[in-house]
Length: 212
Image (cartoon, rainbow, N blue to C red):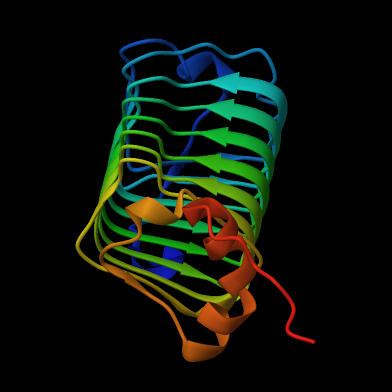
């Protein structure tokens, strides 16, 4: 995780610099419309991306090291099969954030609003998601270690075939959990378990009756 103030003095980069196989080292991308960019294998090193927008942005196999992203407004961001290390994401507004197959290590995501955050098949370790509103968080077939979600709201959590060795959701507002058979390693509060008991029972095929 990296703070903007911790980065060195950054040079300005433009849209023309965001092309496949580009290496952006010590630069700032700010105030740009990134719509329509399709750039694979971009590497961001000690770089800040702030106050940008896009309808469709595609940066597959994106590599981030010591990278700070903030105040982005994106309809769809396809950034699958990337590698993010020591990266911070703040105040993002994203419709579909598609990061399937990405490796996340020491990543912070805070104060974001996301309709869909898809981490299917991802590997996440030491990740903090704080004060975010995520309508659907898809961790299908992901490997999750030392991930904490605190504050904010998660509308739907999907964990089918995920390998979880540490996912703490006890301090967030959780509305629904899909695939209750893949919850080993999930940390929940007693109140959350009570609130979600009916959905767990439905998944397990339990027939509920009311005693007269």
